[in-house]
Image (cartoon, rainbow, N blue to C red; front, side, top):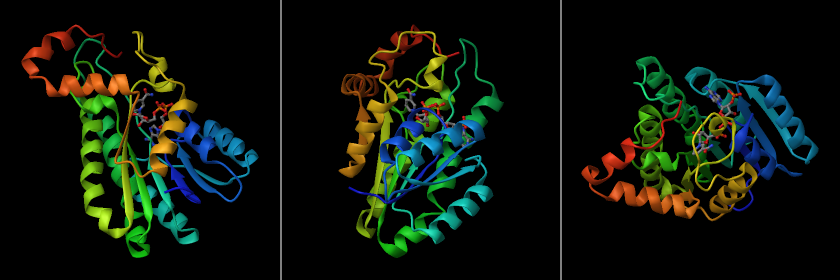
Length: 253
Ligand SMILES: NC(=O)c1ccc[n+]([C@@H]2O[C@H](COP(=O)([O-])OP(=O)(O)OC[C@H]3O[C@@H](n4cnc5c(N)ncnc54)[C@H](OP(=O)(O)O)[C@@H]3O)[C@@H](O)[C@H]2O)c1
């Protein structure tokens, strides 16, 4: 969609979500932003207001289905949502050990259930209007399971494949669906990584790439291209060839 006017962005209190909120903020645009940290979220909302947007912010846990349905339902009734960007996500690694069950479940609750909790309350309205756009934040980490981040990789694979399927189902109903697959982007999430991150990108640059891709209703917005090509190759090669290589890769803490 070229000029969405009513936009929901989850996880807008920092990183890519914050950069996207600022990229879309302009006079005539209504932004609805969430996160859990009220202070950081409020600061982003104020910045977007100073850029001319009308902003409604809410501290909501994306994993809380009832709270998300309540908030999104109210928003859609007040101003029909044109574009929803399900961006909120968490990441954690094994630090060289084994991922705990608790950590794995929490990652799935936020990264997978959180996406469903964001999309589904808005879907009936978009279908009735035969208009809308849905953007799901996946990752290049969702193309091949990497040792060191099993739940994170799997959650992003689920989001990517879910979005790709949804795109086909909703295409005839006037609703666009895109999956966003970034490589490494500078944010609070990657700030904890203690290993070199190839082609590390600034959040503002990532937001520009995403915005351009969404304006063109691209099915998959993968970037930067050398990383996208590398994970494509990793996923295409037989696992037996790449397992040993990936076992040597540094682990996320
Ligand atoms: N940075 C990268 O290299 C990279 C690469 C590929 C994909 N991604 C994806 O991009 C998205 C944004 O990540 P980022 O890099 O911008 O990291 P970030 O700066 O840590 O931002 C994560 C955002 O998600 C929010 N969030 C986390 N848990 C939440 C929950 N339960 N409910 C509501 N909001 C929640 C955070 O808000 P609070 O802190 O206020 O809770 C924050 O606004 C994530 O889905 C991530 O997996 C990032």
